[in-house]
Length: 189
View (cartoon, rainbow, N blue to C red):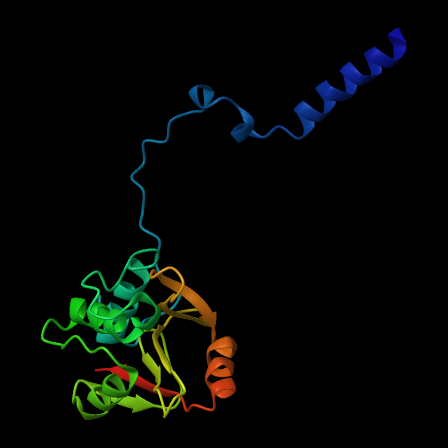
């Protein structure tokens, strides 16, 4: 046993002496370098200046307003009952970004207004911040919400009256399809 401990002790000393790493020492034992530090030169040359920080787009602001409303009643005025408050909720969230936007109480009227409003453009592929509507048609009730990120759509939850990220991209389209309704997406400009 003593021979084994002696061998381990010798091997430890050997490794320290042969493979001595000055950085392995305590920082207080390291010699101080008093030479000025030279800046590192880039290896590549930038052909164009880097873009300055850009102002967020209206779609990004609308997405953020919708995201911040999650878990809250987005239609506190209760102009429409909670089970039919999706258009009122969407209108109130849009008003946070576009203060002059009217409070609209139906998906039919919201769809028509967005179609006519020059601050919105109808798009085929929604992005975060797009307002998405499948308007009521006849006796079939529609719904509306705001497109989120990572495949989520935020809308009023009829059961709780709260704003939630309560649909996936697929679930949103499927809900409209099951009702036989067409989905329209409006990108705020």
